[in-house]
Image (cartoon, rainbow, N blue to C red; front, top):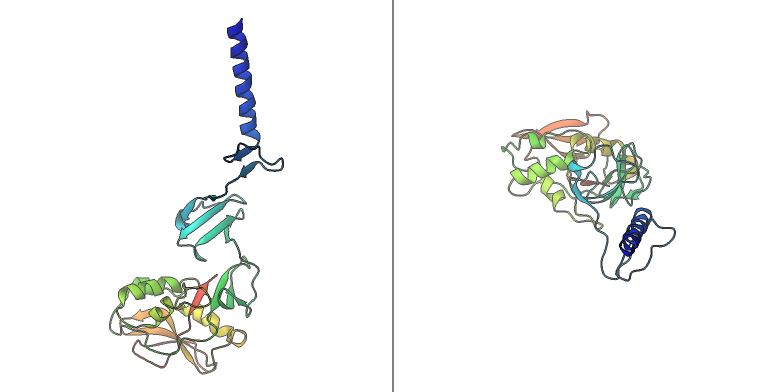
Amino acid sequence: MIYVYKLTMLVFFSLFISGICLSQVSINSDGSNPDPNAMLEIKSNNKGLLLPRLDYNNRPATPVEGLLIYVIANGPYGEGLYFGTGTNWVKVGTMNATIGQPGGGGIVFYIDLTGLHGLAATPQDQGAGEWGCNGTLIGPGANHFGLLEGDLNTTAIVAGCVGPSAARTCDTLTLNGYSDWYLPSADELDSLRVHSAVVGGWALNQWAWSSTEWDAGGSVFVSNDPGFNPYWIVTKSYTGARIRCIRKF
């Protein structure tokens, strides 16, 4: 009889403990119960909460709304905390952006469909100079034309071109607390040209380098002269084109 009683109490106690674990959880070192309003409460005086750290390329493709991850590589807007909206990923700490406003370490000139992310340019250019490596073919890695692709070109150019280059100027730039600047692709630079009146820093009749390679001896640069087609191909050794760096935010 005593054995049955003890067994019954053990089962009851186990169910009671299980019930607590399935309702609210407190992780701490002082044995305290969780706050009544919290499903999970973590207490510590000297430790933090470590979220999953992922390469953005390995993220869940269809994130449930509210899902959190910390991106350590290939994030479209840099490393940091991202949350799922149910359809896409948004980096924490962003807000609705407006073209021409200060933001992202520079001046905003492009905003994506979320209204939270986009591209910012440095307030002024970084001087003028050669595209770099005239006669050297960087190849497919530097053939990107599209929006949000100039960083791919820049990475390929820096890896394949020894010595000074417009891409390296941006890649090594640290400005306003950011060090992930890059030389814009042809379409990114054209977007900056379209909004140059509100962004500033790019005068009429000036030319600027894109990071888009054409061939071993030439690259694409963009004109801010309304009388000309904005896209031109010129030798990489030309020294008169300006260098304007951008970054994703």
